[in-house]
Length: 467
Ligand SMILES: Nc1ncnc2c1ncn2[C@@H]1O[C@H](COP(=O)(O)OP(=O)(O)OP(=O)(O)O)[C@@H](O)[C@H]1O
Ligand SMILES: [Mg+2]
Image (cartoon, rainbow, N blue to C red; front, side):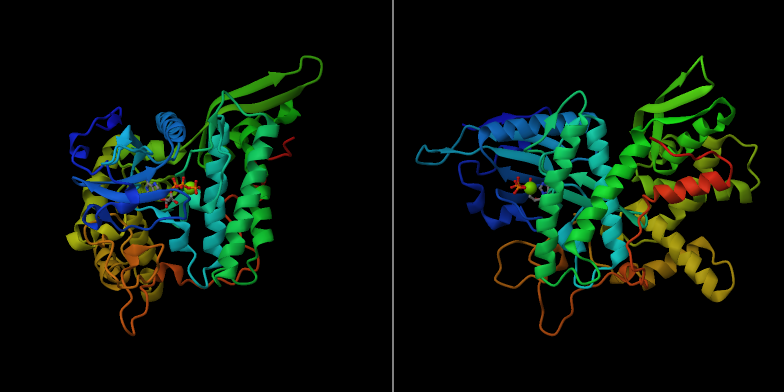
C-alpha cells in the first residue's frame, strides 16, 4: 500500500495507479500543458477540477522539496503550492518505486519555452529578466538559497505589461535565517552558469536573435540583481537637514513594489549625520492594498494598474471625500465586473481577470487615441474581446486548453501542448500583444533604479547615493 503524506489529504488521489512508474501511466489520466525541461519524469494529472503536477523523484529529495515548498508557501513567496508526497510505492512484482511529489499546477503559468518564440522581442526578454531578478532577490531576503536558478525552474505569469516569476523546483534549496553576501553571490554564480547555458540553447535553436546575446543577458541579470539588492537593503547616509531622504527611500521602494516593515534609523550625536537602512522589506505593496480594498488577488503590476483606475474613478466621480473602501466597492460593481461580464464563458481561459482588465484598459487607450474620443469601457471590452481575445492562444489550465497526450499528431510546440497540434498549412497562433514595435537597442526594464532616483531628485523627494 502506498503511503500518502499531505497536510490536505485528498481521497480522490487514492484510485490513481501508484503501482505503475509515472512514465507508463495511461494517457487518459494525463493532461497536456506547457512544461519546462526536467531530469525527472513530470506529468500533469487531473484530480476533480484541479490539475496537479506529479514528479517522480528519490525519497530524500521528495521529502526535502515538499518541506521546503511548504515553508516557502507559508512565507508567501511566489512558488508552486505543495500538495503531498506518495511514498512506499511498489510495482506488481513488489519492487520499490520512487516516490511522487505532487504540486498544484500553477494556473496561467508559462514556462519560458512558451515565451521564447522565434523573433521574441527584446522588451519581452528584458521583462522576463526583471521578473527573474525580483524573484531571486525576494527569495534571498527570506534567507532562501536556491542553488539551481535556471529558466526551466521558473514559471512566468503575465503581470500587466510585465511578468511575475514563480519558483517551481526547490530540490536544491536551503532555507536559512539569513544569507551572507558569499551565499548570495554563490547562488548568483550558479544562476549565471545555468542561464548562460539556457540562453545558448535558445540561440542554437534560432530563438534568440542578435542583438540579444547570452553574455549580455546574463550580465544584465547580475547588474539588475545588485542594483535591486542595494536599493532593498543598502545603507544611506546624509545630514540632518535632509530628513526627506527617509521618505524618498520609502517611496522608491514602494515604486519597486516593496513595503518597508522596519527601517533602522541611526543618528550620530557628534555630527549631524543620519544613517538609514531598511531592515524588513516585504514585496506586494500594491497587491496588498488592492486585496484589502476589493478582495481581488492579483500580481503586483496588475494591482498597480487596477489601483490607478480606481483612483481615476474616484476623482472623476467626485468621490474624494468618500471612504476609500466604499469607493472600491462601487468601482468593483460599476466598472470591473461589467467589463468581466463582456467576456464569453468559453474565452475566459485565455487570461486571468486582472490581466484581462489591464488589456481592456490598454485597448481603450489606443482606441481613444486613434479615434480622438473617449471610448466607453463597455465598448472597449467588447472591442477587445472581438479584436484581440478571440485570436489569443489559450494560456490557462482549462478544459478548452487541455489536449489529451498520446495521439501521433505533431504538436505545434512540443514544450507547449496548449498551442495544439500542427495542421496542414496552418500557422501557429500568435499573440497580438507581442506585436508592438520594439527597436530599443538595449533592453530596458522596470527595475530602472537609476531612473527612479533621478525622478525622486527632480521632485525633491531626496535621492543620494547609497552605499
Ligand atoms: N506545479 C506546477 N505548475 C506548473 N508547471 C509545473 C509544476 N511543477 C512542474 N512543472 C513543470 O514541469 C517542469 C519540470 O519540473 P521540475 O523542474 O520540478 O523537474 P526537475 O526534474 O526537478 O527539474 P531539474 O531537471 O531542474 O531537476 C517545470 O519546468 C515546469 O514547467
Ligand atoms: Mg527543474
